[in-house]
Length: 153
View (cartoon, rainbow, N blue to C red):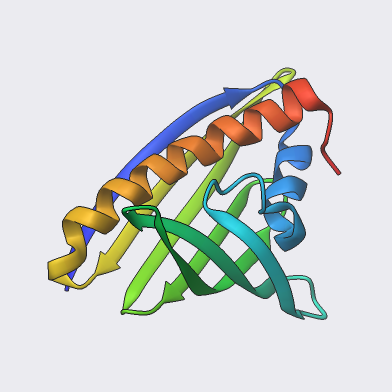
């Protein structure tokens, strides 16, 4: 197995609670994650400490061919308004762990994301670059949604 790690950071004119609510809702992931085309929540813990869902992403591969990839995702919500953690796994042995830490500063919040991607060595070049680009786009989409579109829940 190969591993890739990276960090992203963005400041958003919004509260930590609004950002937390947006990230923690599986139904709001489509439009944030650039490759996701649908989600289906499986389990919302009674305590509210985690949520589990299936996500389907459409991954452009080559020559106009798109792979529909099924991803099992668990969101850990143990520090409301502060930290959101995602654990995702899909075939062929790809695992993604991402942690969003929210730091308020007046009317803005800095979102710091740390990501670790584990994947088969042969797929590293393909997966690592796409994962980093997707997470950069996720943060831009989050900022746009909360600051410009007024779509937040």
